[in-house]
Length: 581
Ligand code: ADP
Image 1 (spheres, helix red, strand yellow):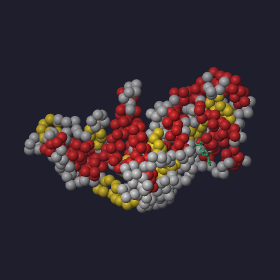
Image 2 (cartoon, helix red, strand yellow):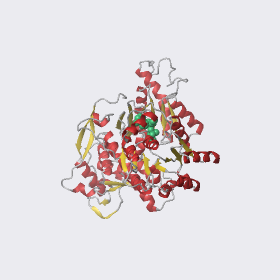
Image 3 (cartoon, helix red, strand yellow):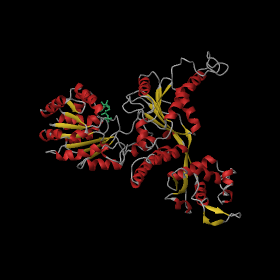
Image 4 (cartoon, helix red, strand yellow):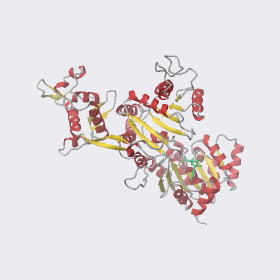
């Protein structure tokens, strides 16, 4: 039998699946051929099968390094149920139990042995590994080895040395869902992978419809309430940026959604309340709650209850911070709404990806606006203030976070297919015949865009950033000395629009040559252009308590005679796909 047929046979026999998912076969084949592998696949894509099948087909033992002791027992129980001899060794066991597992593995009666990375450093484990033929080492959550990853674990640094200490070098498979180039390079280097076959796959989730909606903050809660009201039989997660927001939004949904539903079903009483309800009340006292809040600041029992109510469908909607989701297994989540823009595509995709685990059409909506970007930038700077980092280290972390945030901002602004944007971000190329729409659907593929030439606006903005750094005499001539380090974006817009606001006039900004230059341009347009110029590198915003607009690396381009600048605006949205409107 060829390796290929043997692998398919094992997939069917042990796991009951007829075919490999994208990427799995390549990883299995490489490991069976004794080659190292770096596999980047999103959570839920099926990484485990990629090393479990080679473990069954190769002679010798497979060691699986996994960071979560709490999950080991479940994994091993699952394998044993499928008829795969697996065991784990960890600190929850007595020494006798550990001895037993060692003996079983040494006798060849265990094919997969799960351990935490710390275990590899113990003398006992070293001695065991030295006398047991180890054919494969699978490193789960391999990004934990990199300080550039989100979950660095120093114990992962010992894995490379452990592998090097084995009498016969096994094939090594590193598995992760993390995207950045830097982390991947660290994995290869720090685990000592030799010419690994690199696979990046499975990031496209074809049953998800992606939607990006730019919305002022004050309209967001209303949008969410309408969506929830219109989808009464669906379960959804709404992610908010802060604990306070989760509570406020859950409370507001419980108040407004019943009223909206009653209104749309025509059961409103004369006074605008649902029929049969006392005037003044917005919801019957015994009505089942629609939404429940969930965040890390809640008492554990309240959090547990919220989670249970959501998972068992007692409450259809959970309004949560990013603390919600890890280890929560609910397959029929029909929508995930982000009330604020997350810090990175990694974070967004992981949270949005909790929709549609059952493969049914589901919807992921991101509500954002320019002030989300300002907030995120501010958070990103303050985040590291209290950590014990040298100024250089802090700057490195800040730069890498900014780059991640830029990826997220790009997602909000792009007019390209959102499926393509994400898969490209993760380094995967999904072949699609030119001119065809994405499989799962997204707002951008369903919309036509209007391209607006804003070169003049951009030029005026850039000029104004320069002008406001100087002071002017009554005749509008600049005084010899620069007097300001600059102004914040709100002030720049106010100056360009010729605002009569007190703090504009009292500073003499009405004498500046840029004053009133964009009086005819709508304020929102000026703000959008300024903000996009920041994203595109023409301007920067120096962070701090008073963010100030300055020039970015591409600033000089705006004064070139052939400078051309555009923004895209959705002109028309055609329906909405995935059956999950
Ligand atoms: P990951 O480790 O990448 O998060 P898992 O290995 O836990 O993902 O797999 C997620 C789910 O997908 C599991 O229920 C697994 O049994 C299932 N699965 C894996 N491979 C296949 C396949 N080829 N066909 C169908 N289901 C699969």
